[in-house]
Length: 389
View 1: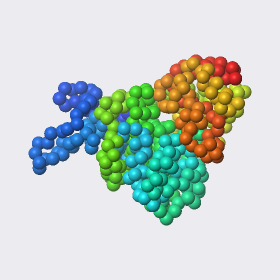
View 2 (view 1 turned 90 degrees about the vertical axis):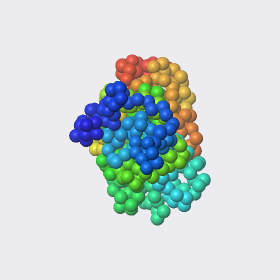
View 3 (view 1 turned 45 degrees about the vertical axis):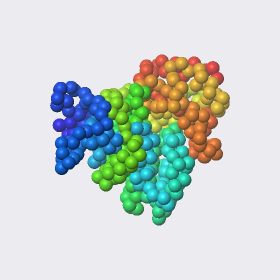
View 4 (view 1 turned 30 degrees about the horizontal axis):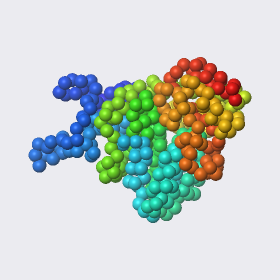
C-alpha cells in the first residue's frame, strides 16, 4: 500500500517505505543499530537482504524506499553526505581520460571535487552555462560520459531546462544527473523530465531541521543503481541508521514546510525589491526573474531560496549579516530556521575570484534561506539591518 504510485505526494511522504514493525507494531521504523546480520545457512545467504551494514541497513533502506516513491525511478542510494552522493555518481560514471559537462554555477563542494580531486586522476571537466542547452551540446566531446546540472543553481538560482538537456544527453547516450537539492521532489522531479539521476543533499530540505547530514541519489535503471551502490560499498560512504531514522521523520513534513517557506520567500523578495539598499534581487517567483517562464514550466513551486546584491560590496554584506538578529549566519540551507550566507567568503570562498565574477557570484551577493518564522518578523529584521548600512 505504501508504495502505491496512485497515492498523492503528501500521503507518500508520510507512509512510503515503512510499515508497522512486525514484532511490536511500532509505527516508526526502528533504528537497526547493528553491524552484523546472522544468516540462516550458507545456501540462504542474504535471504533476508542484509549481511553487513556498510552494504545495507534496514532503517536506511526504508528511507531509500521513501525517496524513491517521491522522486520516481527504480531505486535510491543514501549516503553519509550530499558530497558523498555527488562523488558516487561521478565515480560510477567516469573513468580516467573521460570527460564531464557541468553547470558553470554549482555548489562549491561540487566544483572542488571536480577541479581539485577527480581531475588529479585524469577526469576532464567543462563548466558551461547550462541555462542555454545549446552550450551543453557544444561542450560534448567524444569522451564525454556525464552531464551534471544543478537547477536552481547555488547560489545564483540560474535555471537549466532539464528536459532540453536530457534530450541532448539521450541523443548522445550520455547520462544526465540533476542536483535537485533546492526544489526537492515536491516542487521538481527531474526523472520525469528525462534525467537519469536526481541527487540531493538530504541535509537540506529533506531533513529540514538542522539535525542530520546526508545525501541521496535516485536513478532510473537497475544498471545505474548497481553502479552507484557498488561505489558506496567500496568507499564506505553509507548513511548511518540514526541519520536515516531522523530523516524519515523530517521528510514527513516536506511539502508543508516548503509551501510555507516559499510563501515567506515571495514576501521577502518583494520587500527587498522595494528597498534602496538592495541593488538586485533574484527569486524565481518574481516577475523580474529572467527565467520566470522556465521556472513555471518545469517546477510546481519557486522554492525558499533567494539572493540580493547589497550596495557597498563585501563590507556592506559583512555589516548586514553581523547586524541581523533573526537570520542565523550559517552555511546550511533548507531548515525551518532562516539562514543568511555570504557566498564569496563562505560557500564559494575556494573558487577563483575571476571565475566567481564570471558566473555571477559577486562580492555583494547575500544568499537567504527562508524559514518558517513569521515573514513580518523576518522582514522587520532585514529592514533594520539594511537601514543601518
